[in-house]
Length: 315
Ligand code: GLU
Image: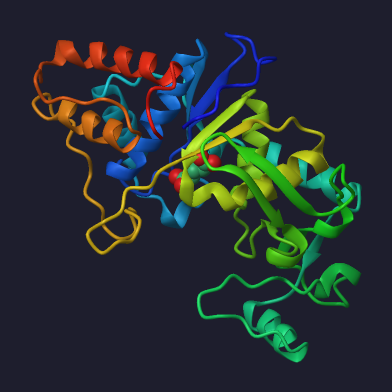
């Protein structure tokens, strides 16, 4: 069950967004996040925005941004404001990094992945295969004459109101979540060694710039939330409410993803309602295949927004 917005967030103050990375067209999984964020905005009488997260240029597929916007339009999911592209936002990310650096909360790092692995091994920490490396903080004391590669957040230099770097937060669907950033994540990257802006910094800067009050996105992103809350705290930015939607799993039991070649959703006039109904079903919303005309699309979307606000769905 999805929790309602807090009572202090009056109708009309709600601003939500869908923030796809244009690494390919929308697939069944990303459509669930798109639909959920749209319905939550509609259910709260708020605005729904679309942001193309194209900062990781090597992973982006040329033209995929346009395809995604066309797919959303074909589904009747029309943003209330002009879409934003992150590749136009570099100066804002730079300003935020400068603010953190000036406050002594971010530092340049010269370590390669090998250096980090060696430092962790030397301190007796062996990472599980595929596990993220928790940066041991080598460059906190300065670059020691080495050349800066990336920029990192000094996690431990920022404290929550409870004076720790552990966060407890309430996800509207998943309930109470906790993560100890210092222990489980470490000083994470804000600007990458290849010069690209990291997702964590860009998403926090842009959610604040767009006045986002409610983030609705796929559950695979849930464990990024404390990093984003930490950054919001460090930059003096407000923290939105978060809701993480169920994932769509492929036949192999893995999350559907563009990298693993998930098929684009079929948004042809004959198929679009069925496509949306499948996404709605994942969200526990009522569905029926009785009427598949285009006219029924808006009726269904309105009915789902109503079901969503009355909490009848089981998402
Ligand atoms: N761009 C991210 C993705 O497509 C989503 C970011 C977000 O919603 O915070 O996975």
